[in-house]
Length: 554
Image (cartoon, rainbow, N blue to C red):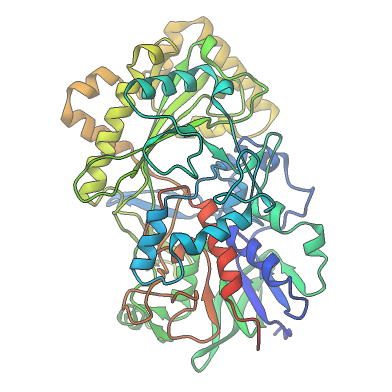
């Protein structure tokens, strides 16, 4: 047993956990411990694959939870990546700095998350950011997270051609997608610097924060379950180097993400009481919403081999220059519910610079999945997304893919591309792993593809996408979408916030787990409905606001 005089124990050093460790330890009288299952990344010692402002780290296997899978749709189970290292997903995500729409947060408030409407959360968005382009009432100027944009003059040829095609279809241009909330094309805001990533651990756990006497960081330590006395949490049981230990604390905050936070609650007897009882587990708190309401953004990516004059310059690291937010018009769906973006390169090497992609996603999705305890291995979460199970999501994904195909056939875009195809995931991931071997192999393949068109066409044939065929055959387009749509890394909703009297709510508006004293959840799992944005910046906001809500007295 490890006896500590710990006031707040934070489980998970991902995006939210890093914010909380910094903000909560600002009070020197409050002793804080941050626990992370993966390795530490001390400032200045991050691997080059993580520091890069292009997301190379997404293909490095040991940055992720081993063996994690998810059922994308019934009968279709695949490996699914969730980061397992200091900084969590902020070290592997694409660094898009989208907040979502005011209506997203007003919807939270309407569903019982009082104090989480747009006017309530805007100050926390401002507090976390240092916008390098804009100022004013909607932007922050001295936060730890830089926000910048690649303006139109710097867009490389393929991305520029897609933007021009979008504009020809009548969509307006917006200067700032985080301040202008209608339909339109805008420069993609990014949460990095030109030369490097700025993850949550880099931004919030700098050397000065780590040197605080009241903050202890414990990495390589997996939390197995929560401990209780009566109805109050008293600490956690952990596995550290194969040894079981107990750590006691006055308050515990789960920030392990929308898959592992509910899994830890379930392993600790907090969840649907009937299900837990059938599994032979003692019920600590009967909360039917734990693990339910699993949300994600479904997406379809279509790659294209680019002509040489359409490629991004080697010195330009960015992978997203512009984005289109638009309204599907589907009945029962809000406005600005769709997102489309072009990548002018898809990896760091020569082959990646030769391949662009056009990507479309449903950014206000309604399909819901779940996280449960695996009947085969209770320590591993059973994840099912039920992607496109809601008819509105299916219809919008088909219509969005149709738009992407039409853009690929636009005359200006066609002048910039050759074959369109679906990349072979295994081959692409092998090439993308950092190393001299990958660099040489990718350069060799790109060189051959440029010189020998028949070879290129033959090698891409089994993944070839024929826009004309799909646009002319509705049934073929639907099969294509259902077979190729995938869940992005935007996992949320499994410990939903709401009115304490609502049966499906897991935490109240103060982020307290309903029915348990001293226990909080602070991460993307508490989102009651999906945000119209990548989840990184909203998760930072959640943690910034939660740090002001967690009691500062004992």
